[in-house]
Length: 574
Ligand SMILES: Cc1cc2nc3c(=O)[nH]c(=O)nc-3n(C[C@H](O)[C@H](O)[C@H](O)COP(=O)(O)OP(=O)(O)OC[C@H]3O[C@@H](n4cnc5c(N)ncnc54)[C@H](O)[C@@H]3O)c2cc1C
Image: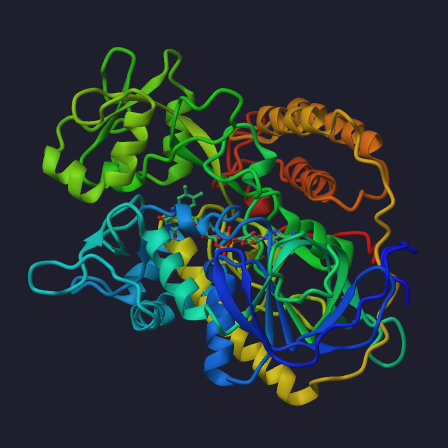
């Protein structure tokens, strides 16, 4: 088999003995088994390939190793460790019913209330009931959460929660969880740095269409775990099971709390093999991104909802609070309601945290306070300007309660997965939680699959064609697409706006051509266009407003859409 459409690079034979190498910033131990020798690329075999090294991917990897310590697991990750995903950025904490005045039933009720009639109640029950055990897992793995004077977990309250429910580490909860999981995974999984560009499936026999691995364009990195024989470029990572844990889609929007690398790759990968996707019209915009950024940057500093939970208010240009008249929970109303409230104010909106004790700001919100200071503001002494920013992808790859997708052998967990727990609106803290709960469940399901049919020899179909040309103005096109997505498929959509965004998507698609070039920029832009089209199509179809999907031209619930979840399937290209 020729990898990469007949590249002229020399053949690569991979080492058969376990070795230790440096990968990214950490030493990793790895055991590789060469499958065969290929022209112009690497062909390596693992038991499981996990695409994504955020909370979902790492929890699944560690839980799999708890179940089967000898498993060979590859974790594929875009760019330097921690540079692409949202996990290290999470602020307010992880929701779980661990407080004395809380219960899984209350947690489930709050989640369903926020979900605006579209939650899958079985999935919500699983998440709420299993949440406390997943908090214990994180603590067992070394995560240090804030404690009260008596040693119990110090909990924060965020929007939609009737009681304080988030375990947290000040306002850097994600960074602490990420640190603990990284340390726990170090030396136990193989991190491959590169971008997954297609899912590999079996081409022949009874298992035709079953997942057989993932195609990855590997970066050139010093000390790759693939050893000196690795050539950067297209590689086939064979595996009996592939878990998508690729995070969200903020990189498609012009103002976002996500990193640029959040380009909805998981949607592109899943659509490429015809997997079912669901709820794609539901994209959450966080009401309070700081309304300033570095020049040329689309990233917005998130001002966590926990600030409002601690007493900060939202005021208009005259200093008047406007949320209490809009919702009984005032500033802690569900996020889409606060977002709409902010967008309805003509003269801008400010977050006023000046009434909070200075000690609270310093102790509980050091990351946010320092970030705001870098932009020349002081939370303690002045209201700061805010605007809604894309924050979370609610829809994604359709999964069952065990993270199984519609494609045999492919699983999804974390932000890329649509389990149905969020309904039409995600409640604060539930994202880290659902990543842990369904990452854990993915591990159980993958283990069960491996026990049933591990190591099946599968003839893999042709390598993806990476012979396209990335246009010289690719960066500009990417930026224009982001602006168009925010304008037409942002917090408020209309038929005309969506049509215009669709036009820009078509224009971008025509400019980039059918096949990507073998570079990260090019592959990302292809994924962005594929995902953007599905987001827009879903938003066009749902002619009503529900949860975070706000149609300016259909501003009310339509009972005909009650309980209806839109399921789309990408055209199979692999
Ligand atoms: C600023 C901010 C604050 C937040 N605060 C909270 C909070 O307080 N509580 C809460 O519950 N949630 C919060 N969230 C949401 C939550 O952090 C994320 O939903 C969650 O961390 C997602 O985890 P994940 O493992 O699914 O993906 P991520 O952590 O986003 O990781 C995705 C991984 O996939 C990799 N990847 C993607 N595409 C490819 C590809 N093609 N090839 C190879 N690798 C790929 C990336 O490199 C990365 O490693 C916040 C989000 C943001 C942005």
